[in-house]
Image 1: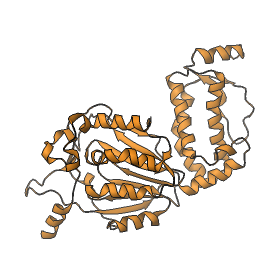
Image 2 (image 1 turned 90 degrees about the vertical axis):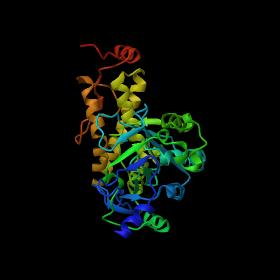
Image 3 (image 1 turned 45 degrees about the horizontal axis):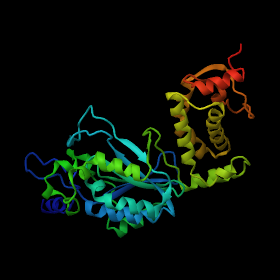
Image 4 (image 1 turned 120 degrees about the vertical axis):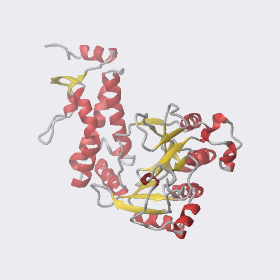
Length: 369
């Protein structure tokens, strides 16, 4: 019992995460630092780490991890766009979902410079999660509102070495904060004197996560991303895809880019079509050609990468099929369907076509019997 109490006393939760006390003893459930790791589903070379560490060490982990990302990366921010209250119990229901934002790829040093003044607030607020990633390098680190670190990587030895240097031990039976009852707290809930020293001098607006997260999204030009389109491509995946794209004269210029961005672009195009496509026929066909490039990679990729990409875009493809009308007709295009698959994205036209697209379709004879 004595050792358990020592672990409880020594562990430092962020102030925005408050574990419930034991009803009989009044003690908090003991929490220790450590990490676990497993192979990602449908992967042979990518790993998912989960780690718990003292709040005062999260910034150090963040800065150390940034060195693995090469010259560029993107920042990830998750928060509730509307105020959801000062506190939230872990078992709360009927609550809104947070929105995930990504920044564009930009120099890592620039991200760190912008983020550093915000780090204490990002770490300690119970309604915020944040991270750094470079998909082309196959590295991602995220610190969730549940105050658990998740790391995706194709180089597990590098991450294990980083955790070792920070004093984190591998513990396959590690308990996480989410295993216990707890409350989420905003920084505004706490009396000023209970806040970390770095936060006590900030005014109320600066401590409001809605305001400081919005400020951060503006500074980094961030954009919302659908949570359902969450995936990880390892460096090996990206290298294989790069080799495939280099073999196609029209796609070679995209070979060195993050293929994940192309998958996001296809999803964004489908979202635009669902809401009402406002561009002309040429712009519409540019969107369809994104799917051409993805299909080329699917057709040429080894089984592991092929299945992974199909799984990533499956839901987006189904949504696009549902908004197509006149599917017996086919848009004119240089590429034709082959025996392996049907290019469904060229069969029919989206239901919510705007004025410019309808105008061009009329001129091209689309609506003639």
